[in-house]
Amino acid sequence: MSEILPLNPASYNRHAIHQGDRNWAETNCYVDVLIELIHSLGFEPIAALPFTLTIDYEVDQWGFFKFPHKDLYKLFGMEIQEFNPWRNLPELIEQQVLAGRPVLVEMDSFFLPDTHGMAYKIAHVKSTIAVNKIDRDQQVLGYFHNQGYYELSGEDYQAIFQINGLVHERMLPTYIEYVKLRHLHPTPTGEQLLIASVELLKEHLQLLPTQNPFAQFKEAFTQDFVWLQSQPIETFHLYSFSNLRQYGACFELVGTYLAWLQSQGEKDLQNAIDAFNRITVNAKTYQFQLARAMARKRELDTVAIDEMGRDWQTGIDELKRLYL
Image (tube, rainbow, N blue to C red; front, side, top):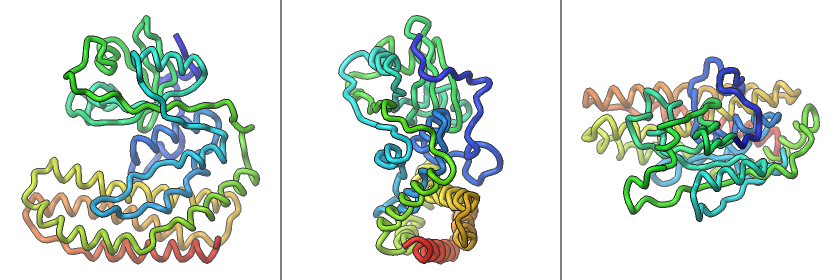
């Protein structure tokens, strides 16, 4: 057996982001898995969240927000690099884990038992996990995914790695990265961590969308809604994940980050915190309204998008005033 961190799924203590009452229990697979990995390495992932401010509407969807690798290196000394799965995947993962490197790998949630009731044995959904443990002899895999840490074994192990052969000949090799921990910093805390995080915040405030993204989203949504009314509910879920859930979850992380700054002694942040929190609440409400409007073939106004746009501008203006 190869293992990096001595973790037990039954006693694993999730990060606070994945506990308690939140509007969006999960964000996206890449962010969620890194939140838990960073947390398990002894660091505070909230300090690395300034990048969430830069999410934009990208022509037909909101951006799939991800931790920039350079930010993780600057704050914690974590290096993330892609590598080529040129041979048997379990062997490749084992070699990296033996070297003390967690492995980020895209898997099919159809074979991930922690997604029971959502995708497990129901839908083929690409999702990133971070492998912490592998035992090729006993066929056991320990991995971070979504909100926690889990293990799978037996038939699930054989299925996730396609031990008995590929489902079809044209399956592409999976996308895989390893996390090098050779330059991990001594755990930064207190003022040291705050200073480094605020530096990142100032950098990302230079990378904001050039115009209010909700104006672009409103224009596209007005056209999309006509098309959505002719689509099945499955299309709604795909659309919502790429839009309402993406920015709703992202701006909830913005609120979490700003509240953390406030808890560390930063001043005059409450107006911005309130603005971004209103966005995430309204995004969830609007998601429900969209689902009902599709089901009942009714119109849906865009007043809520205008309100979210105003809150975005309020929050951004406040942060620019304080940090630029």
